[in-house]
Amino acid sequence: MRNSQEPQDFNTSVMPSSLTPVHVAKAADGLNLYDTASHQVSHFVPLRPGEVGIYVCGATVQSSPHIGHIRAAVAFDIVRRWFLKLGYKVTFVRNVTDIDDKILDKAATAGQRWWARAYYYEREFTEAYNTLGVLPPTVEPRATGHMSDMIDLIQRILDNGHGYVVTDADGKPTGNVYFDVASWPHYGELTHQKQTAEVDEAAAVADRMGPSVDATGDDKYNPVDPADASPDKHDPRDFALWKAPKDTDPEDARWSTPFGVGRPGWHIECSAMSHRYLGDRFDIHGGGLDLRFPHHENEMAQTRAAGYPSAARWMHSAWVTAKGEKMSKSLGTGLSVPSVLAENSAWVVRYALGSVQYRSMLEWSGQALVEAQAAYDRVSNFIERAGVALGGQPSREEVTGISADDLPTDFVAAMNDDVNVSGATAAIFTTIRSGNTLLSQLADRADSEAVQTEVRETLLAVRAMLDTLGLDPLAEPWVSAGAAGGASDGTTETPEHAALEALITEQLNARAEARKARDFAKADQIRDTLAEAGITIEDGLQGSTWSLK
Image (cartoon, rainbow, N blue to C red; front, side, top):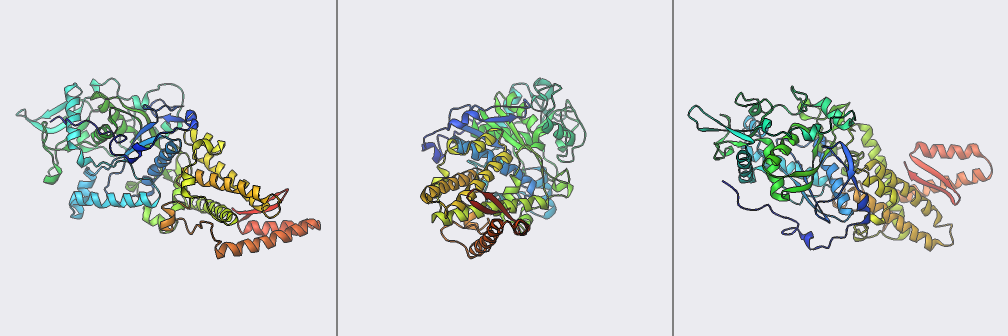
């Protein structure tokens, strides 16, 4: 049952962007990314000039998405957006696992058709992605749509001597097919390639909190697949490529193959779909840190054993933790996306999820959301004030048209340093502070026209940097959905902002008079009162400026 159709090249066949010339920024020469297999940050060079292929493991759509799921989506959305800002064409594939033991079991318990349950929760995930500004993938394949690809891949593995079919007493295939780990000497290279004294903290955390090649036993985050616990295996490390159906599996969850009736093992799905849409070798394979082992280790082994080189680089986003424990439905600590969005704007939730580098554990708390709201207040305050001063905002075309080469150097340096979002965010707020200082000079400077030009350049830089992180408040989805909490485009001043401006200006004028009269106690009192109200005062040669904390 070989599939004669060659893998699809979406960059040259169906992607509208294939008609757009590639202009890779010079800044791309400085991009360095971490590789899980080598435990090192190294210079990124695409396999094909001007193009980047990325495959990220998507959701198993068994139930509603929680914040832990969406953190991975946001993390790799930021990675993707940085590649786009650098000028690359990006083919981004994110799969949907819509056939799985958990889906079948939960559907049966709820009296549902398994495929109906999977599709229902797939739509919930899509809605969560869209609400939080995650760009749609170039292609989003479902596992159930690629059975022939999986069967073909398994047959290649068998033909190459790296798998075996379990037969019954009569020599007939049972539907169980296993990967023969002992036949593949490279097994373990993804998770334990470097056996040195050098410590990789991200990998060490993963090994402590979950299984690895060297640490057997129960994994509370990824329970053992019953098929992988079968006595029919030749070696305890062997894993299922294809699984015979359980007695409770419905008839429409079974597929006929040369090695018996059944359904795919979990790992084979991603090998088949990544090869279908990205070809023999692609630039980056991504996913959550908990997929490092066994999923990605097994995926790498079976792909290479089939005769394909697999991904050139593996990247893993760390977990969302609550009090140091991985956020997980099975542990009862999951926070559903709708419940979090009911109390916070989508912009604030996205900022909180993307506030640290993708490899860093993200501790989820009320304080994280408070800090994200404060960040939004500072961002929107500057954008609105600058828009009012200029009589309007730069267009979205201007914002998106800014090349990485034209962004502030500290922002570019941070993003090129393994997508260090914390450093990039610091660069944004440094630029906002400079912009606030310029705004305070407009009324006092004779060369106000020159200052206006500087304000506009600063505003454009701030919005372009925010857009690179998916956070420009005047972009979709924030504008249409009102998800950012009422950001203004700056063409008119909101009544709330006008009132705030008048009150604070009056206080600043009173403080200036107190300082002029050398009444520093009164001046400090005014400053402290404003600080308690969440207003930051910065003194400069041209006077005092204010911004929201």
